[in-house]
Amino acid sequence: VIDIGALYKHTGAFTYDPGFTSTASCESKITYIDGDEGVLLHRGYPIEQLAEQGDFLETCYLLLYGELPTAAQKKDFDHRVTHHTMVHEQMSRFFTGFRRDAHPMAVMCGCVGALSAFYHDSTDITDPHQRMVASLRMIAKMPTIAAMAYKYHIGQPFVYPQNHLDYSSNFLRMCFAVPCEEYKVNPVLARAMDRIFILHADHEQNASTSTVRLAGSSGANPFACIAAGIACLWGPAHGGANEAALNMLQEIGSVDKIPEYIARAKDKNDPFRLMGFGHRVYKNYDPRAKIMQKTTHEVLAELGHKDDPLLQVAMELEKIALTDEYFIEKKLYPNIDFYSGITLKAMGFPTTMFTVLFALARTVGWIAQWAEMIEDPQQRIGRPRQLYTGEAKRDYLPISKR
Ligand code: ACO
Image (cartoon, rainbow, N blue to C red; front, top):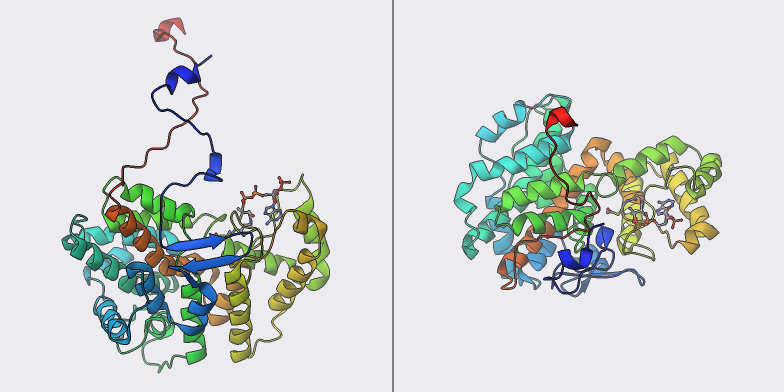
C-alpha cells in the first residue's frame, strides 16, 4: 500500500479533481462565464452585443488588447491583419505532401505546427512586439490555411487571399471561388460566417485552451502551442461535436423518429448521447446557441432552404428535449454545436471542415490566453500531480526467474 501522506508531505494541500470540475488553473481577465445564468462576457462585453453589433476582427482586438478599438485603431488593426494573410509559397508544397483523402484537421495540425519553421523570426516569446506579430500572423493566416486544407481536400487549386475584402468574405472566397468562374461573395453569408467566428472566438479554460496554456507554459513557441490546441479541439466531445450533431440529425432523419432517439439518450445501457446537448459549464441555455439558431434561420432563408428537413428535426428535437424530465433534471440544453452544423452545411461546407472553422475562430482566444499567461509574473510551467495507484516498490527479477 502506498503511503499517500508520505508521498505528498512537501506539497501542503493536495486535491484530486479528475476533469478539473472545480479547480482553477489560472487567473484570467479575458472571458467570464456564468453557467447557471447562461452568461458569456468577453472583457466584460456580452456575447450577444458583440455578435449583433460588431465584427470578428473587432472581437479579436478586444480579446488581445482588453478594450474595444477606436475607429482609427480598428482601421490600423484590420490593415495589419490583412498584411499577413498570405502564407509562404513553400507552404503550398507542404500541403501537397499529405494524402489527398486526409482529414483537413490532420492537415491543419501539421501545417500550423510547421508555421514556426516558416516564421521563426516571430518565435521569440520574450519580446512583446514579436509576440504580437506572431498573434497577428496566426489570426491572419488561419483562414488562408483552412481554405487551402479545404481546396486540397476537394482537389481544386488554391485561391489566394484578396485583401480588399473583409476577413470573412475573403475566407469564403478562398473556399468557394474556382478559376475561370466569377465568384461574388453573398453578404448575408459573409455576415453569418463572421458571426459564427465571433461566437467561437473564446470560451475561457476549455480543453483546447488549457492545452495551449499548458504547452506554452514550457516556453514552447506560439505556433507549436496553437497546433497543440487544434489537436485537442479535434475530439468529438469538444470541437468535433458539431460534426457529430449534424450526423445525428441526419441519422434521425424525420420528426417521427425523435422519441426513439430521446429514449436512447436516456437509457443508461446505451452509450448514445444527444450530440449538441449538454455542457460542462452551462447548466442553462448556451447564450451562443440562441444567436446560432437565429443565424441558422437567416442563412436558410437567404439560400431558400427554409423547409430544410434537418432544421425541422432540430427544432422539434429541441422542443421535446426541453420539456423532458431527464433533460430538465440534468440541465441539458442545446449548446452552440447543435445548430452550427446545419448552418455550415447549408453554406456549402462538408462536415469534415466544421472543426477546422472552429479552430480558425478559436485561434484568437488561444493566442490571447497564451499571451496573458506569458505576461503573468506568476507564470510557472504547468505540472499537474497524480494519485499513484500502481505497484508498491519491488525488486527487479532477472528474466530467467520470472
Ligand atoms: N445526452 C444524454 N445525456 C447526457 C448528455 C447528452 N448529450 N450529456 C450529458 N448527459 C448526462 C450523462 O449521461 C450524465 O448522466 P448521469 O449523471 O446519470 O451519469 C450527466 O448528464 C452528466 O454528464 P457528464 O458527461 O458527466 O457531463 P460533462 O460535464 O462531463 O460533459 C459534455 C459535458 C461532454 C458536453 C456532455 O454533455 C456531452 O457529451 N454532450 C454531447 C457532446 C457535445 O455536444 N459536446 C459539445 C460541447 S460544447 C463545445 O465543445 C463547444
